[in-house]
Amino acid sequence: MELDEGKGIPVNVVSKFIHVDSSFVTTQSKLLEKKGFLRRKPSTSDARVVQMSLTDKTYKHFASVAAQ
Image (cartoon, one colour):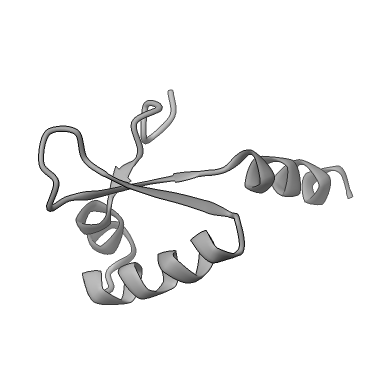
């Protein structure tokens, strides 16, 4: 089972999981989004919450690294 279950993961959950401030996650996720590795979108239940999920580009990159 995937952590995000296809819906994405909120910034605050990621920040707690990796023990950093949510502002750090927000800043870094915006950089990853610009590079096409991450998708950020408002939550359907609460527009204040940003859901993050990996893009197909990221999964392909992981697959190529794992193959090496």
